[in-house]
Image 1: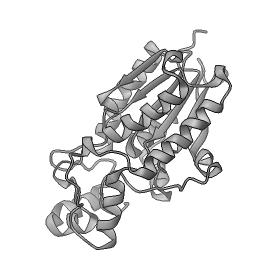
Image 2 (image 1 turned 120 degrees about the vertical axis):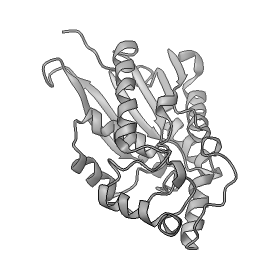
Image 3 (image 1 turned 180 degrees about the horizontal axis):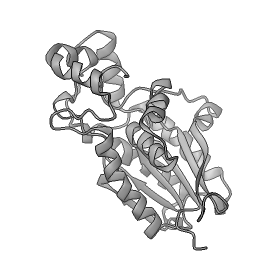
Image 4 (image 1 turned 90 degrees about the vertical axis):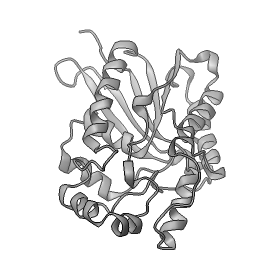
Length: 254
């Protein structure tokens, strides 16, 4: 049997960003908009996000050499790219087979709802707010933005790339909360109800790890099997605060 998947796959949400901090302040004040000037793609890590990334990178570097990642793929958004760069520095660039930014790993696009708080969405676009509540986030597509299904569609091609270019390798993907959840939907073969139940249970923590290992006895040709979900022990072990702030504002969970 020819193996088609990476030997190991780690999904990482970037460290806390300046956008996470600004959103929390806006929501706490019941404001309508997030006070941040940068485009979403340009929002950097916060100081805490850098510390979280360093803690996670140190954990990866502590693994035996033959168990460390040898491929790093990341979203081109600054907060994810900065997290990946810290990881790469600890892993030693010359030990890596590939380092690639991939636009398919970008954050879910929120269109006209970008930079609005929950209060702002309900106030400025009450009809869209109601529609989203009725349809649910899995299928709802805001004008100019994406639904979770749209994100899943682009991630299907990322899985094709993993099986074509990185079978047998140990791959880290650094991206965003929705990306982690949508990969879970695909890899674990979930349905809408299952993945939204996980989403309602709690946000994906910054710099948490969800990981999979190839198991040759699963299924007809072997498959990736979940090992860790939202693993934050590397942060806790170093006393680094764990944060779960959303990347971007959305209406309340369906």
